[in-house]
Length: 387
Image 1: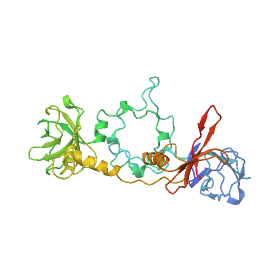
Image 2: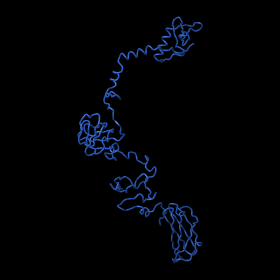
Image 3: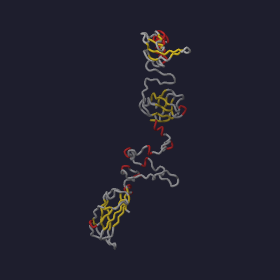
Image 4: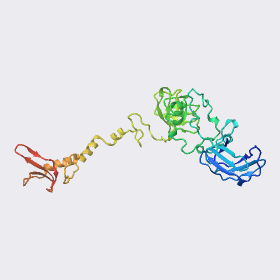
């Protein structure tokens, strides 16, 4: 059974003979009856033009409409002057020789530019983890960066949605799959081991080789080993001549052979600002170094504070308006309601139900309450709005 690639054209040669096996010549296209079945489907008439070659050989040009279905393609050609011709083919999406022709063998590198889209299909069981029962599927170290040509795997070579969270197994990328320094590589822009320093400086003549003064100023320094780890400090300067960082505030111990990282992040300008430590906070502006307590002491004496309080207490407040007194009034309104009830006229209306009325300076009822006395108990209800 001959393999054919799906949806391709091919001219198929075939030999026609008689009952004795001898070649039959001189047959015409119209003398053939042609039938076709795709992947076991119902037989149908086949449209194809048969041409004679020589010595009993003929050809039938198959079009893409003949080879468009995966599976077994069967063609039967009958002619009254010859034995029946039976042809069978296996239609595949890709052929081994097609894939082989797309792979460069130079230095064992697979060139992504030579592999057509969909040229290689994926068998989900083709590459599996070794269980120890059937041998290693891929030898250790076989797939590495040197296996691929430069630029063979990039964003353009990977289809949209090819790598998603759904396609990555849970815990596929964990601590065991990451290199020991993976976290450092991600979070840091520079790492090294100090060659000297103090509680406020760190020198590294191997790794701090930048030429610009204050190149690292404004970034963060993280100490990752020794008795200063894992403290972090703001870099306030860099001296290229000595490969030395200056930082603040001071560390509790002098820098020795500590490992360190400069953390990735936005560089900030620290000129003119005093680092804050403990409970002491420097104020902005002049005089330099003065703190908040000093500012208060300098600008508001106890006598001055008392004067301001007295002025506030001496400020007149307005009467409260007509309405139901709040259960949670402000101190101002609570004091005014009490004052109005003591200062202004209070009347008890006894024409019907006894009502105690609270009035304002204009003798308008702003609130009132029901009063009852049954000879045993005297009771006053909650205030409601007047009049």
